[in-house]
Image 1 (cartoon, rainbow, N blue to C red):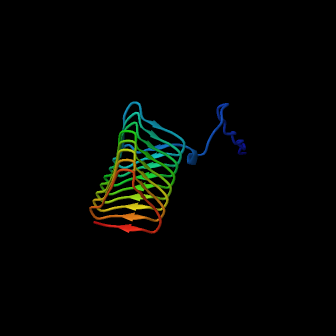
Image 2: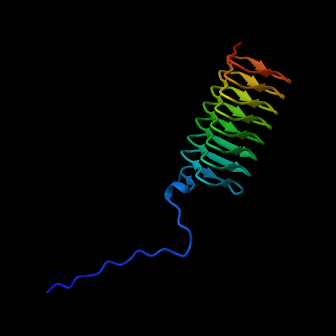
Amino acid sequence: MFKRITRLAHRTANRAVSSIDDRTSVAATARVTAGAVITDQAVVGGSAVALGAVTVAGRAQLVEHAMLGGTARLQGRAVLSGWAAAIEQAVLDGDAWVFGRAVVSGRASVAGHAQVFGDSTVTDGAVVDGHAWIHGHATVTGQAWVSGRAQVGGRALICGTASISGSLRIGG
């Protein structure tokens, strides 16, 4: 009486199909301008802004109200969040986390498991690496290098060719 209907097989195009986890994600509320490159499993979410010839790659996250501008790069599993900004030729890599109202600019680099937060600034050719923290209103500038488990806070100024490493805490 009833005729059995055979199930149709699902067809896909002749191309590699990746899972949803292998795609970039850009929120409808985020702003991404022409020239910005978002690749791999990168996320641009919230009200974040990618402005200029910037790159968000790997599993990096540009979220909340953060701004990536100039030719800055956010890569690896780095996160730029809050009201923080990475501009000019800055690079955030590894598991770095920049948040709050922090600014990374010039040719500065934040990498490893380093954190830059509060109202702090990392600029020029400065490098923050390892498990270092830069917080408060601290500034790392010039060719200075902060690494290891060093913590720089308060209104401290690390400049020139200074090298801070180990479990040192500096405040001012």
